[in-house]
Figure 1 (cartoon, one colour):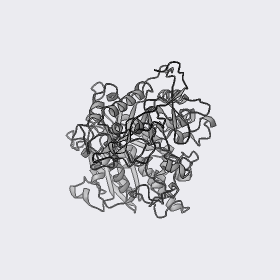
Figure 2 (cartoon, one colour; figure 1 turned 90 degrees about the horizontal axis):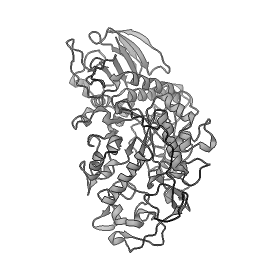
Figure 3 (spheres, one colour; figure 1 turned 90 degrees about the vertical axis):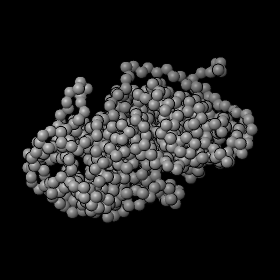
Figure 4 (cartoon, helix red, strand yellow; figure 1 turned 180 degrees about the vertical axis):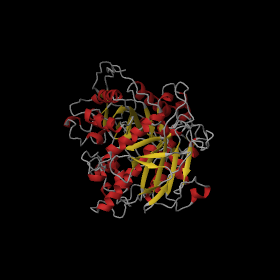
Amino acid sequence: TVPGVRPGDRYAYRAHGPFDPSRGLRFDANRLLADPYARAFEPAAPGEVHSLVVDAAFDWGDDRPPDVPWAETVLYETHVQGISQLHPEVAPQLRGTYSGLASPPILAHLRALGITAVELLPVHQFVTERRLRDMGLENYWGYMTLGFLAPHAQYRSSGGGPGSQVGEFKAMVRALHAAGLEVILDVVYNHTCEGGEGGPTLAFRGLANEAYYRLEPDDPSRYVDTTGTSNTLDVDRPEVLRLIMDSLRYWVTEMHVDGFRFDLAAALARSFHEVDQLSAFLQVIQQDPVLSQVKLIAEPWDLGPGGYQVGEFPPLWTEWNGKYRDTVRDFWRGAETGVAELGYRLTGSSDLYQDDGRQPYASINFVTCHDGFSLRDLVSYDEKHNEANGEDNKDGTDDNRSWNCGVEGDTRDEEIVSLRARQMRNAFATLLLSTGVPMLRMGDEVGQTQLGNNNAYCQDSELSWMTWSPDGPLGGHVELVSRLIRLRRTHPVFRQRAFFQGRPFSGDGVKDLAWFTPEGVEMADADWFAPTARTLGMYLSGDGIRTRGPRGERIRDDSFLLLLHAGGDDTTFRLPGPPWAEDYVVLVDTAEAGPGTREVKAGDDLRLIARSLVVLQAS
């Protein structure tokens, strides 16, 4: 307790003790250290920040969480600064801020899309690495956390004083809730901004290096690195686990957020060297009366041994499904992989989540995210182009599973531009009509390009900010995305809360889920594994929904036939007749840029344009 302090006052710690890296001790009484529990920070000299005393009072009014069920959730991954920085209708002093994200033009766009939750890239106070500053670059994504209980100061409005970011963050959450949108935070508890042996001493290292970090048992002067950032927090330590839990509860109870996406969550579940699904971290969250009630999303991998844990997290958790991303990308780029795995991914990935009692919404489906190509770049580049990052194009993944449609980068060739636009529509339609929880990447709906940069973590510039002047046919997808989300929201057959069984549910032999070849007959085992298979029909029966409504009532819906054709040539698909359907109505055809419907007869051959997807409603 320090008598007489007031909101806005700055403070820091000095910690006295031995500097003996061989024992894991790195005290330095000459360093001013940030408070790990500070509620706000104020940037000081380069590489330094000051902790702030803040006034926590805030009028929440009648704020309440939207509490959207998982099965009805549509995520939109976005960046606080990037979404409003270039919007011409957002007031200049609010662009790039919490208030900018909550401004009427941005809220109107999000509501027009129909998404139900924003997933914000890190907003915990972070710092830019010295290496980037020396190159004239800035940490943009924010995965270098300093303060786990403090909103990032840079995102406050230009008129806000020291500490005002706390109130502005709360006001943003209140506005998003009022618009019916949940707020999910991307949180980084697996490492800190202090780096490895040569990194700066800002807080944790100078307070209790041997407690906060995993150190090599045979050489405590070195850090265990399963995160790719040169250090890993030691969540087995009670002090570290308590800090994480205190942080998470604070953001729920005091800041009113609705859930979290855990960066490199496998690193948090490690006990000693192995990923342990019974680790203290997972067990404590599972039992916590506050955190067990919010949305929990794992990025189910890290860079350590056995770190790829897709499908392995316990009940209560959902997961970024990296296998969904890879499979959908492979299918639409024409890889000779067959369609067996695609069938699993389209229907909730039962091979990953059913055996441990989870439901289809455990799968967070995505085709693109902040890390990697934007959707426009996914169909425009075969190779990464990260030269602007200053690492000789060596950073970023080489496993892009992309296809440039014949030309690397932008082109005026109308045929290629048309194909790219169709491929983007294919990705949107596949994602938004798959079973599971879809996640869209900020800017894909307006055709944002990063010019082939697939690792724009250090590009705090127009390269990363959302573009609000859509660029021709590659940018005009807002209406399509909105229409697909509306179709998903209207029809529970696309929002299954239990896995399909693929078996008849009535005497006429119609199954809840059926698969068809282009000849209009149900697929045999060999059809699934043929490497040249490029065309797939998926029938979803609205009468075969096996879960009940909130009052125990049976849920009935229309039936749908989805035709996915990734072949390079036009083909035909014979539409299944009775008992599956008498007639069909084409609701979506990605070969066409705009909306439109047309009736077709069961038993007819429907022409499919090369690399296109068609959605038909059965009657």
